[in-house]
Picture (cartoon, rainbow, N blue to C red):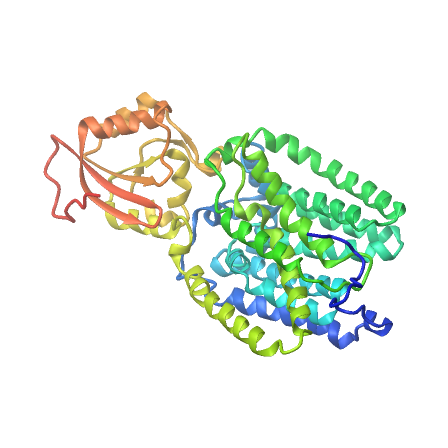
Length: 501
């Protein structure tokens, strides 16, 4: 694999474009930006409600963004500081448009459309208007891009900022101006403040400049800018390091295979003599951003598991650029039409099942809406409610009416009052005593259960095991809602029989 920035001159390579080709018309620039953005917008709006369901991480955004700014600030001092800026942005969105599924996800849809536009312009700068147009369209169709375009989290916004920062980086190599570097630095800093792992894209940009053999003045300007970004990010990194318990659920790399496949495909694309139209080649920009962030997180995971695919969503900018430039190269080959047409149709057909699946509730690891609805259906007014574990309380709290008539037996102080995500629970002894006062208890157990070494969680499970029996169980995506009744209590009213696992 070569990252040589110079246009290939060997026999069989694409010829260097004539001077006039370096200045695409305004119409071609517009097409490279507008068509990918339009496609991404259409794909994002298609099935955006996901059958009116919401998964756990979105439920966190949905609930926190409805708190007052001071409450958000006090909460992130203890937990989830890494998403503080996104919660603040979504608070403004909810104030303007109301809290709902559309207002929760629409910012991500718009951000991914902006990212597709940025990828199109990036490809245009690197290899010409057709390559840019193809890169932007490929980006909009990638399954991972479609997935996170419809999630109320920060990842699409980060992706958009990095796409445009990459455009600014390429432009800055050939153009002087402190304000240009300031714009690049501010864009990267904003991306990092939305999610601190965006700093890995900054490292990838540094590799791009080194392998491109850019002048020392460019390296020096980038170094100063990068230092400013790191300094601006440092307070967030220091404080959020004390909240590392938030990622304790990661037992190993989470969904690394789509990115690994993208890396393999991207490297294969570089085997072709891809054309270049500037001091930075497509490979020099795309390969580092595709490979380096994921490689660094996977390496760090050997010490502490920390790799999650969405943390490096911006890496797909790299594969989109490489595929776009490669398709433009193939288009220039003799008798390309039958082979390329068949391959393109096959690739689009293969995307259909994935695209349909991504718009179903089952495409996410849990369904907070379904969990709350199941609690509402199984519970009766006056029943007790116990979460196994307590940190998953937020999954059933998306719509307060679902649990309004139940008594949360472990809760000492609610999430809003305590400035936490899931509230503060009573001591273990008090939880057991309260549970013994009820004849029926509804429990919520998610796939990642609480640790039995936790005294509060142990008190819950021991009390259920010794004094209650399972009466009815409902399974929903990512959770199990079970009704328990006291062994020596009055017989339960007619209801659903136990559905044993």
